Length: 282
Image (cartoon, rainbow, N blue to C red):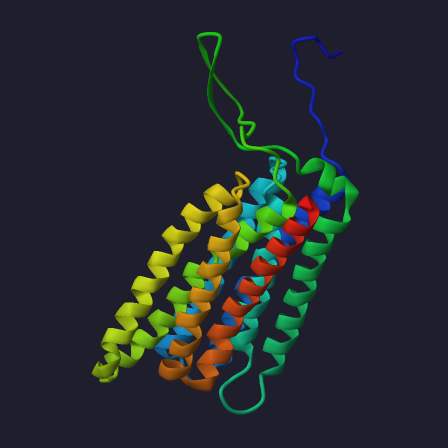
């Protein structure tokens, strides 16, 4: 017999439980596919190690996303979208070798990982049950009536659209997507290409600067400041103007495809999200 003081366990909807399992499988698949790519790579060079390490960090991102889903956080949708898209690019650029045919296990693993990422995005954005679950905000300490309590922090800013949140999350990936190829280019310095030192240092500094600019800009973007949207467009174009030429010069066409295209995809998603958010407010 249940007493009045005994807590009642709320069972999560089946779609939410399925999403949690799917995210766990995607995290595991990311690790397995990256290890396969590393094993079958003809040369375990410095650049491959950096790109593989960055891709492996995404498995931790999926674990963080599981926590957001369990807590019903509204930010889980845009976070899951950009994580799935950039994971496909990050892993896909390592499957194809510089020369020759990709190994069959790597191709099969990449196909499975892509299917899992598509399924994650479909559940996040197409399931009404999941959408109804992801409505909460983070919790924090709140002073109310002279008492300190731990409760949900409802934002004081006006409600923002999911497209603005997506633009913010996409823009937050600019910095790591710039720093990874900069670190790869740093490997050429170790091999004696000292003329690349100024360019690599500038690349690293630009990647760090972009992270601070995006944090500043998106803080006002979510508060509905019109100038913040224009500033984010400028930051996006500036990041592309720095990253793509340096990828071409220091890493060649192979580096431009492997490291430039993921940033281009994130930038396109951010700009598209800004456009959709602006269209909704008209």
